[in-house]
Amino acid sequence: MKIFLKYRLLGKGGFTLPEVLIAAAMLGGIALVMTQLMKDQANQTVKSKLTSDLAQFRTEVQTLLQNPSHCQANFYNKTAGTSAPTSITLCNTTVAGACRGVGAATTRFPVYTTDWNPTNTRVSDRLRVSALSLTVPSVTGVSIGNADLRITVQSRPDLNSVVKSESVFISVPVIINGSTVIGCPRSFGSTIPY
Image 1 (cartoon, rainbow, N blue to C red):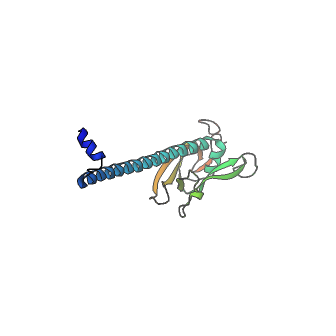
Image 2: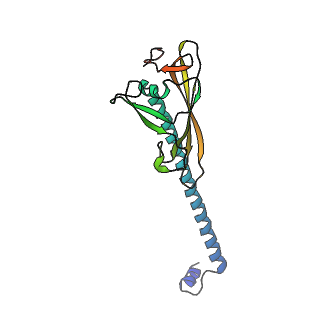
Image 3: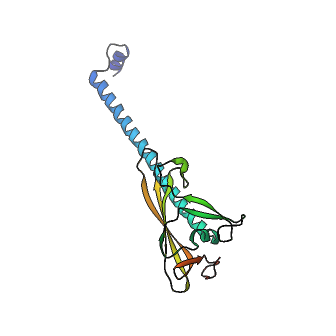
């Protein structure tokens, strides 16, 4: 063994062509595997972020609509059947006027149907609301019922990827008179409008 190493170190021999080719193939294979692993990890990170953003969006919308004034801004005077809102609306209670006397309406999550543009996205840098629909049941007299809000959210990991759509369903208790929402309850189970 010492003679072999001494012979190689003194320049009397070198690596053979098959040895060089085998080493190059091994390095190439390792580089290919590492590149694929890094790409898979990046994709998994983006998917996790999208899932997290969607869950956070759902929680935020549910929390907003539990507030009677925001509920009022989105559901007041809607009739039985399905309507198509253009945004999820909030009420600014410091300004008199709209929102049935509780403040001015402001847009929180507008619907975007034009080309994908990250600067127009309102959910996150990779999510946008693409459609909203509302279903209000028809009841007899004045009663509490659930207005069902269906939010279609589009996700896109980057500008070169395919846009995917998912639906988020949220039910909100509202006070209905016949087939029209007359308000949101002041408290749980109450038929007195906010």
